[in-house]
Image (cartoon, rainbow, N blue to C red; front, side, top):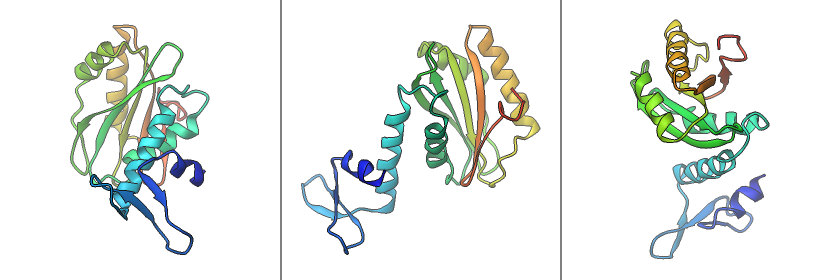
Length: 178
């Protein structure tokens, strides 16, 4: 997997054995050691490309890894939506709302509006818990039901709501909460 990851990223170059790192080509065409955040950003782009257009029902592990990498280390809450087409293929991943260390204001109207603009048939709701606790709160459950009801009015299904931590991705559907 590591070889595939780096061979598909044209701006990265493997460093000869023993040097212990990667080089990145800057805008002037010169190579310099890659920063950790640049490597993570490249990995996120690669996972995003694997997720976009994929059938989330046949590749849940890829989706979970993408979500963990994207949201797991953030020091603040982010609420995101994965838009799906009629075949449950990923149309887009959108980070819609950003909050504080312990909460995010989410507006169901905006989630539904965005779904209509993207011609979405189904949604995966996602948010992170910087605290590391992957259990949904009562507020998470209520928000999920509110968005589910609002989306249903325009024939958009909510398939799941994932809660992401640095170590875990929990599915509210698997917990029987959807």
